[in-house]
Each structure stands twice: as structure tokens, then as C-alpha cells.
Image 1 (spheres, one colour):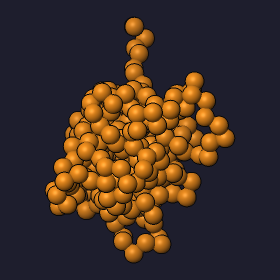
Image 2 (cartoon, helix red, strand yellow):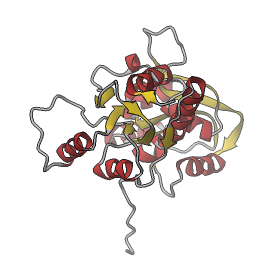
Image 3 (cartoon, helix red, strand yellow):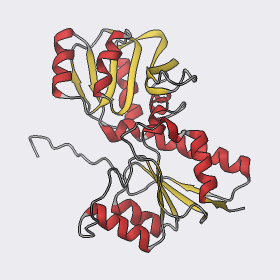
Length: 273
């Protein structure tokens, strides 16, 4: 049985309620008709032309991205720009585009849970809980612990494996042992002080501000910047499993694809190169 887009949106709302999105965000169906049928979905982090072209080439009629293709009201659409060209091609090829952004960040399980699970953390709770919600496990970031402390070196082995990268940036003083870990997939600089106040031995996130890194340095708190892409990429695996469960429960014949073209936006260049 095929699924109509509004049914897919209802499933996403169960997974990551759209009401959890920040007031400045733009989530849900951004391009498409709720009454259209969907047979194949491609997941991704960023609404890029290359990802859209991959969807077309692989026969996906729907694209679900973490970051929205329309973020603020558009005064115009210049199709010569990357954003304008994306909208033009999606409309021309009738590709539905859905965004699950900060609603998936605050959902439970959500973006930060996916990363925390790869680090083998236990006893997870939100780093910054949404106080207006009765559900105490929803909110931004996560803080968890290990049953027994790890050496910092052993913890970093887990970090590199979870992020699947070879380099991270570190500010502050690395602890000798790590037991309590705070993290936030994606841009989480603003939660650094909260992580420190909650007793974390280390905070893992991305896009850490210079002033925040200096603060961590002076107070002796260890902050690790694992890049936006790497800290959010595990969430796509989680979303795939969640959508597969919804499809099975509803009897949908829905193909769910992971991106093949999407890669980290930054590359490392060594001095010798």
C-alpha cells in the first residue's frame, strides 16, 4: 500500500512532533501536495542541489532533510542562486520536500540521542529540557554517564569512532577520566555553560563560538567541537529506523534511502600539502 504525503507527515509528527520546533524555525512540508502519494524517500541533512539530483536519479519522490530549504520568508526566488535553483528543480520534477529540524533536535529519541547511543552513554536526559512540556525526556542536547569512568584517551576513541572523522577541535582542559558526558548534535555552543553546571566532565557539540571556547579554557572545562555534519549524521540512521517502523505498522510500501552523495562540507588541509 502506498502512503499519501499527509500520512507520512503524521508519522513524522509522531516521531518528532512539529510543535517541538523552535519559534524561528521552519519545519514540515515545504514543497509538495499533502494528497500526493509517496513511494520512495531519500533522507539527508542539507537541501542541496546535489542531494535533490540524487533523489531524482534514484527515483525518490520525497526528500526529507534536517535543515529546511526555505528558512525565512522569501522576497524573491532567483533561480541562478543555489537556493532558487533547488526550488525550481524540486517543483519541476514534483519532488516533495520535508524538513525535520529543531523538532528532531528536541524529540526523544532524536538527534542527540543518536550520537549518545554511539558513545554508549546511559541514563540520558535533556541538557536543556523544554519546561512547558510534560514529557521530561524531550529537549535540546543530552547528558548521560558511564557505569565506570573511562580514561580520556578511551573516551576519545569512542568519539572518533562515533563521528567517523580523524580530527576534532578541543578547548579547555581535558579531564584525566570521563564519566559524565554532555552533548548536542549540531550547533550547540549556547549550551556549554549548562553542560558545565550540570557536572559534565566534557561537552561534545559543534560550531563552538570563540568566546565560548575562551570561557572553557579559563574555567578549565573540556569542550570538543566535532563538526556540525559529523555530530548530526548519526540521526539519519535513527530516522530511517523510525520511519521503517511506521511503515511496517501501517502496511506502507515505502522505500527509505540513505544519501550517497552527501559528504562533510569541510576538508582538512595540512601545511605539508
